[in-house]
Amino acid sequence: DSGVTQTPKHLITATGQRVTLRCSPRSGDLSVYWYQQSLDQGLQFLIQYYNGEERAKGNILERFSAQQFPDLHSELNLSSLELGDSALYFCASSVVSDNEQFFGPGTRLTVL
Amino acid sequence: GENVEQHPSTLSVQEGDSAVIKCTYSDSASNYFPWYKQELGKRPQLIIDIRSNVGEKKDQRIAVTLNKTAKHFSLHITETQPEDSAVYFCAASGGSNYKLTFGKGTLLTVNP
Image (cartoon, rainbow over all chains, first blue to last red; front, side, top):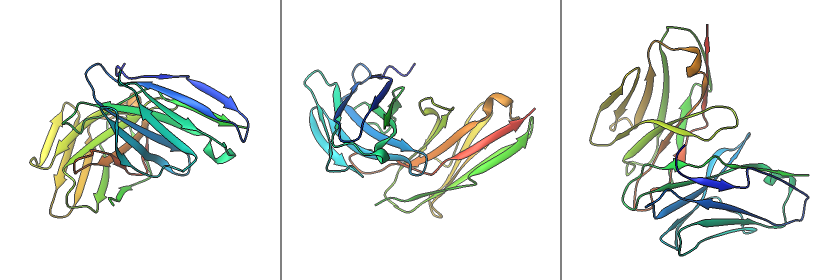
């Protein structure tokens, strides 16, 4: 167990819908990262938050957004869902000044 | 941005043999190189990492080597066991945001 939690474990929804994925980092970690893992694209960095502020953006679609709250948990919002958004979404966390990232168990999103 | 190439994409070995997975990276500013093991449907788990001020690091049957000049790093697993079967990802990170850029992964199969 990495200490990073994610909910829900599984999510099945329809095209055009909106979902919210939640992540709680390890105790003491200020940085949260979101990654998308699909069969054809591998593990892709989406976005990073550090202590409530956006720090870096990767291959994140405009339909996706995220935020980190004062208690340091983070949410990834996916809207106008398409079939191609079906993937595993991982959250990872790290301490402020270290690269070492610990991954949560992931949320498997299926868009029908 | 950073680009990480990983080879081979699949690797099959006999139990007890050694396995080597190689990665190259493009950004000379990268200074942190972790390796993750991912079992089917599970989260990536950090198995070993190396920083740019070190050329080699070993942890029991697992070792990682880094050649900064050539921008290569490799994972070596000795005395492989069936439970080593998984997908292995290399990654590179550098700069102030610590985001990880992953290779495409190597499916390692250890045959009993």
